[in-house]
Image (cartoon, rainbow over all chains, first blue to last red; front, side, top):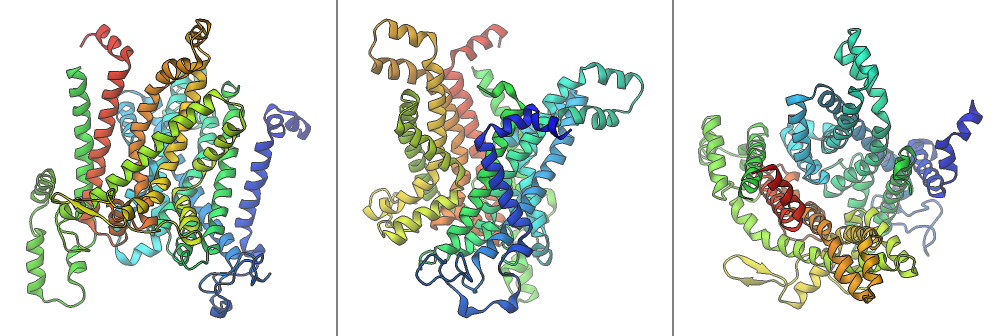
Length: 302
Length: 328
């Protein structure tokens, strides 16, 4: 079984694409570092008792006054930058995954419904998707974030901010899923197995979910991977603009924003290291997504 | 042609109406602006006066109709945060954003097209490969990080260029201020324009390169070579010309991207444009400014898409023949 899996086209292509292997390793390091932050990080940045203002603005270890206690330096409150990055990446990944999942659920649902039923519903839903696609996704995310955030009562705003950001980024992305799924559903709908299922009286919802859905999931997986990179970047952008996650739960974007205030006074490590972490994470995920797209769709090769 | 334009405009109207409704609905659903404007201490009479001054005591549909009517005349109410008319605020900030967007687009086209042509023709040279790697970096780095890196290099370490603001501006006419006429203004424009234009530049470069590679393989290029034309004529007279249709379309559509990322760039550089105004307004739920921005952006996008559609129609003769064959 394992040998067959190892020799399959899919993993063969993986083993013979150095970029794919390298980006997978890099992505794995980023994800593990983020997920295992509470056990791997040298300090706990949320433990206020362990913070000492005397430790603030320590440069990274390779600079003249750096110490191994703060490998990438410390910030304005004496927090270890490396630990803050690991915890921040955790939140960035969480928001990214949730936003992609949300977009996927909405987009796949709408795509299936539009593709399977056709007619007016299809026309209206796809027109809405088309209109939304003419706006850049990041702009939609920013506007939705602003509007929903403003619509919430003040005392709930801080608490629900994470949900608002997930909602905003997810809403910005559903059309891509919906369009792809609709296209594949249109193809699948005409096939014999769907006809057979319909003839024996299976309900449309069951046909969509248990017969058509498994057959249209391939491209969805590719879009989801590529979207994860975008979602993480979008969250970082919103947080950098100060309308994303609050400083009490700093993501990578929030760290970059906080560090940006100290850029002019020369404490560059507070901004640049979270930035590098963000870029490595997004780049590795995007390269992996590119490879996945090519591997699942041999026509694009060449 | 007329029917085509008319149908596009008719399609645009529902979009604007829906966006207008969202922009208006924000006023209804979002917390009480009166409390925000009055602050901590106020009397009941002051409150009532403010409510009627803002028109908040009227019925829903009256307010909606009033809102749309006023918006058509460029009046969006009074900013909660700055207590000034939104129309004036936006007019004040518009020149800064337009100059930035213009400089960024110019940079993207002026550098992106030649770079694309070069990498398309000399696809295996070392310089081409370097440019491709550079473009990958340009696509992968988020806009705000590019800005931060530029500030770190050119403002903090080298001290050559300012890191925030528009520098010295000159007033032209009634309300237009420009930074293009002073040295300090031009210096202040350099870093933000690079930050905003870099992504579009790499995109245009990759697009031109891909199109050039496609066109250079085609038969008429082989034929042109066989006729003994100089490679200069072939590359610029034949190949580049035929790559420009998709480039124009994408560049046009990317104007929207420039508007979106102007928000980020303006925040990084504290550039006093509309994007910065919008972000500051989102932070404190300043609804009049947010809804005005929403409507303006929707209008801008509808206009851009319309213009690109028309341009496509004008540039690509196949579209016209197709339509004539099918009748009006």
